[in-house]
Length: 223
Image 1 (tube, rainbow, N blue to C red):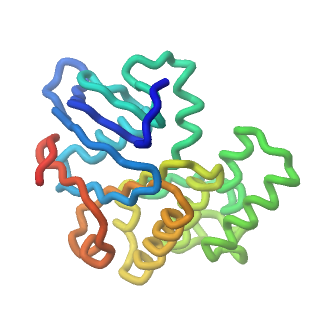
Image 2: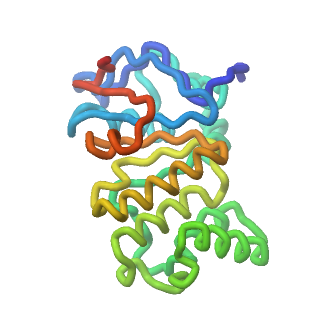
């Protein structure tokens, strides 16, 4: 464990899959605690691969990656689950379980923890109220609008109070009104202390919600 004020730090990080060409190369940057950052780039620029690194789905093939002060490329496999529990993920397309209600989708991370049933119900109800879906707790994903499904996905991602939230194109399937509501929720999470990283290719979204940005081009950073 290394002491650091940065939640995320990359020093010369590269990533390749198998014997293929590098999909990320020589990435160096840091996110301090409580930051909000845009991750920009066209399709194929490497945004998803970078998010896979930050969610600990893969490890770098070169360079140094630190999350919460822990060196990831040298960490043992048993060291990774506690780090993953400090990370919330909002996937492109939500990835809700179709047979579970909004309540049970949001409750899933707490049931895996596990959390006592009385505390779980109170926490999930409070979270769904926060995202404006208290009246839709029993609805299945197929009964929700795209904006409501994305809000359920955010509630599920943050129910365990992660220190770092990573969102992959969270507004891609939403209209402007729904996207605005979603960005308000992310901004509020950030105001409460969560470090938020949002990947997008929408220039208009970034213009409406200015914040520092990283831009990826062909797997590398560009100014």
